[in-house]
Length: 366
Image (cartoon, rainbow, N blue to C red; front, side, top):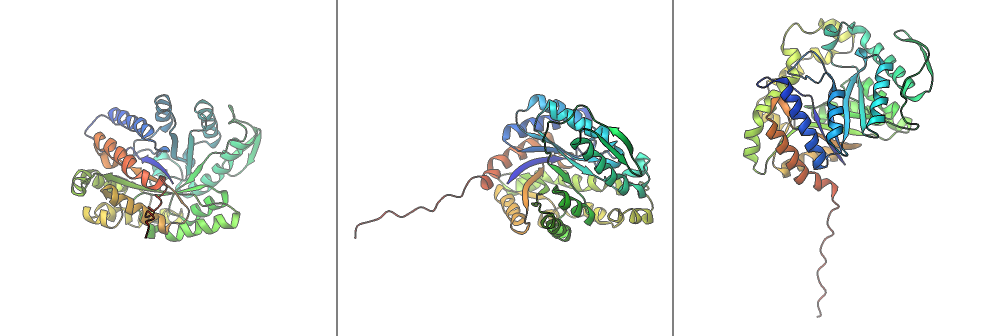
């Protein structure tokens, strides 16, 4: 089992934005010291309470100079808003400068992005899938051409090129069946979006596992959950409440703002019906105790969190990694450091150390 930390870098005010970036950088350095396998950041624009992570490359560049072994993951690059040949060049350069430490997701992006970025919402699926094709042609081929609806490329190449044979760990995330089919076809990793219990995505994960089997690929599932931990359960609940409430509100904030989405019929026609379903708005109003009891967030003692992870592991075939969010909803920096450290010291060893052999009773003469 791998363990990582994931952040959206939600900005809820109360401090300068630059200070928040510096705090996240310190959290990455601390996660490296504590032995986490990876640190992941979303790439997102326009809605600060959801995220101000507009340029993960800058964070990774600074973090690479202050860390030794932890991997860096952008989860994920929103392909309809980025030229895929330029993205391939950026990935390749980072790989050469920070060898074997980059992982990335390739996503269509949230349904509230197209109007703000000036991209036709109904075209985003086609741009996304064609962009994926161009991106991997660029990464995997010395020279490449492409004749499509959105990209027409004649005998191009990227510089620098990634090292020969370098195979990146690639991630998809989302709620549509097509996302899980595509990941299964390509042998890519699926990251389960935070806040959703297993039952909400059971059918899509079954599609992923079935598609992996059909194409000879092994399922690789990452489970993301906001997490806070203390040796005392009531202390954990008290200290986590503001951040967990903020996390749910932050995730729904583009929907709560009003007049930020395309019309419902356009959302549904573009495959973004989830954003018109009201699910996120209802989650943002969920009572705090229900968030914990219904497995929307993980808050409690180390043993409480271990039991939650074991519960997911036992029902989710193909689970390979647990990723926790510790700076949820504008939570204070010291709480993020505390949660990372206690989780690393008291939870991770339970899943990494082999179970002790049962003691054998000494033989006695009789």
